[in-house]
Length: 82
Image 1 (cartoon, helix red, strand yellow):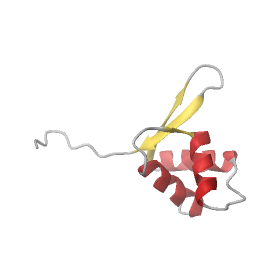
Image 2 (image 1 turned 135 degrees about the vertical axis):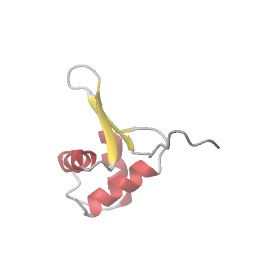
Image 3 (image 1 turned 180 degrees about the vertical axis):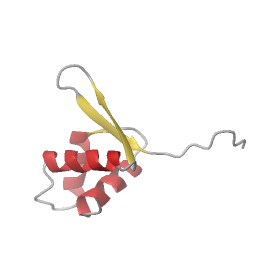
Image 4 (image 1 turned 45 degrees about the horizontal axis):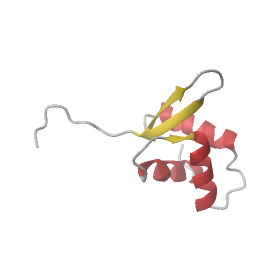
């Protein structure tokens, strides 16, 4: 999926060092761009698609309703010495 919301999600996740909750990502996207269709449901749908495509990582945390947290997928090279 390659649309404006998805690109903003990837940029938002890439620029932070810690995982973000869905609500935080939604707020940051609304700050960056005036997107009327960037509802929580659409942002969550795009996050799930990006996770399915392997571009980001996400995990459901907490009891009950809980929350999803999302972070950038970083390639790790094992065995590489610095």
